[in-house]
Image: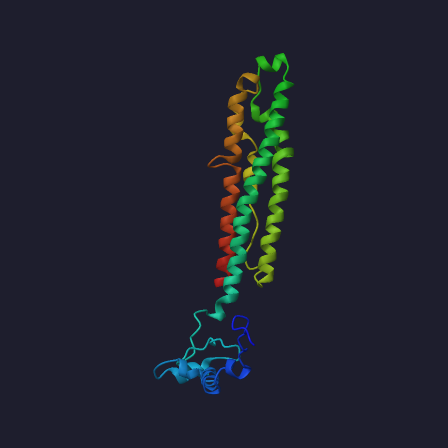
Length: 233
């Protein structure tokens, strides 16, 4: 006799667990629909045609009209040339300022050393500062700065040669300002009591508004303009 409490439920047959064939067919048909049916309106055909194999839209607009480039490729060489010249100008401005500042520090150190060696007689009857510091200025400031300027000239002339402009314009720094050396110190006696005044005069001479650095920065600007104008003629 079977116990009703221990009776087990009969397992469902696999056939009953399956999705009805009709419903499965509807799902497959939905997934296989043409892509264009997902896009409403008259543009569905155009959009479906624009889909590439990866499912992404190509760059060409739906209208099929190519977008005109805003870049004039004929002007690209001129723009590249101009960029090279302007880069040289900007780099030169920074380089000459750093160089003059470094030379100024070395010249000031030499000035302090010279003052320390000044004997009692010179302290009483001081000579003009420019006479004492002239040789040091030539050795510490003038010669190294001219060497640096010649290297910058070579860089600018290399750009001119690259763009077939070498020899069409003179690209040379005028270093005659350095011939005056430290003439602005002529009226200052070279003695320890004038140390602060001598120091301030040197700073104005080297990095002041009309000093050595500013003078050659202006020249660098002028040379870059000359080269740019030579390309236009």
